[in-house]
Picture 1 (tube, rainbow, N blue to C red):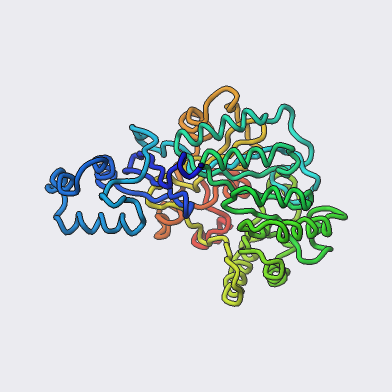
Picture 2: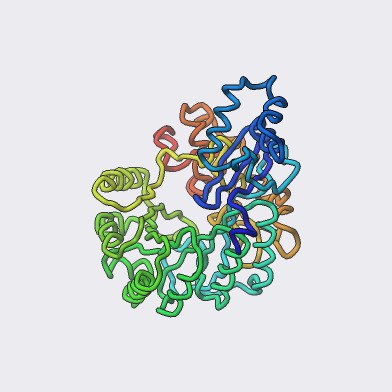
Length: 426
């Protein structure tokens, strides 16, 4: 039923042409203005009639090659008609029509007190979003062509309605990912979760030894997390990754963490760097420039010896969807956004400690995306001479703005882990 209600290809007009989201592979595909025009005109027209309208722009050979490429990714039906559904008729002039993905903190509540938690989770916030409010958000996402939802916390399973939320996102055709620490997972939850669709299930696990794990996540938590993971692996078959936050205390356990992921039959493992935010802001946790590079190089070497998919931090930074990107800085506020459990919007979760006055309780997601000052700010960075003059700029765009702010107190500064900035800056 869902497949009939929600076609495979969802299309959004953009300032450069269009973005087509392929639900099957879970990716956005950019096309220029000429391709977008062809898609629009292809509805209900014969191939010869269609070419006549574009013969002054393209040779017959070029036109046929384009159609063949579209057929290869199954964008056209047997009559060469475009299969995508357009979600909008007018594009924004300087930014994406809507976020590609919403990162949603469904609650700040968490049974753990991790020393490196960027959101300082523990107790829930007052007046967190209701089930109805989250369902309304999912409805709007579907309507404006935002096809991906990433659910996190706190610990999402502290919400009794979590599975209901995921089920509704499935119903509305939103590709959903979920992040959990697994300590609340039991057999019943695993079985119910297995009835749903998830693009990816991320399980946070930061230490292969009990000593390291519990130093980071608290006493008497290691066995609870392993028990939850074993329930997940025994009673569900969702695509799952171990997610490791890298700090000084666990980088020596990298090989062991990879072996653990293999032994527990995870599909992959993802590594990310801790930032000096939240509970990590006053502790000796975050990696130096040298440590970050050493652990990245170690992970790349270990990748050769494992069948796991590995997501390793890009150094220098690599901007996603480069063809649709035109701003200085990372993708926060330009391609993705973060909504906290009270409905306030941010460019990404690492900035959720900054003041934000605009909420889903007052504005629609589209209004927030277009007009919220904290989002617009991230599209207006001036950059710095080091980055703007660098031959890596087109792929990097200056790197992570959170690392720039929390290390240099300047949103326009270079990324701390950039190899091209001067040693004086570091």
